[in-house]
Image (cartoon, rainbow, N blue to C red; front, side, top):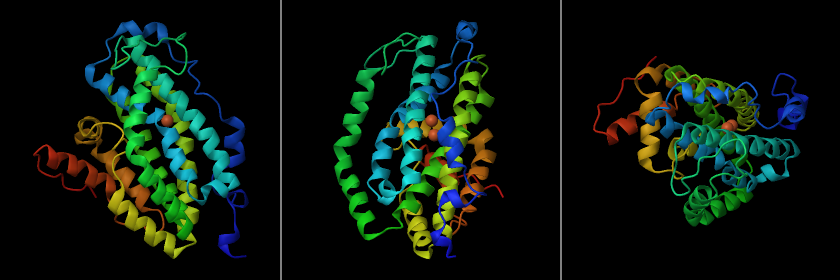
Length: 298
Ligand SMILES: [Fe+2]
Ligand SMILES: [Fe+2]
């Protein structure tokens, strides 16, 4: 049998989609001790990280719209995953929103302090403002994805690889923030979200691997586009100052070993050897700040 005839379901060594779909649910915050929020302050740097993470999590529906503009929409496995993935990411955004509210951090323009009983969706004005800003320029890129997908069926491999790197950097950022914070509740919240992010990453990596393995064209296009267009997740959604802040605060210095792990993992995908996108992103941030580049860890 040609490997291109194999679906995810027929590859038991790969992601167990059935298990994921059966277990998908709103993030489980039952182990988060909200009544301990007042035991320590949430530092301004931590609040800035969480606000960034909240905005990106909340933005997932726009990323999903772009994926569904490709032939992914016709794939029963992919569209089933995306339905649950988008649901889970929405609740991650709300979990971070509540954390900031319980910590007493207000954000423009709502200046809302969401707690357990605040009506959903919280921060309506903030979400609407970000969506308006982002979607103003999106019709062109959305059309490009749509047209590209018609002429190039392997474009789905690019979205899966892109998704794998975004989920992996997100997952890693949550681990790095957990290691850095001294707040008693933040690690509990991040642990709950990390459980979901691991599964998201596993799905995208599995899909990317299958699609890249079976098509030299997919490998060529994906490598070219990742190298040319990939930027730190959040670029174009939040201000450059924020992507540079989070890259510096979490991934530079103590985070460099994690960056090396991220690059190694993505480079293990077929056709992606030597890409070094994480490393490059840190050095681009350093260049903008007038700092010398880091030497890449082996
Ligand atoms: Fe998430
Ligand atoms: Fe995720």
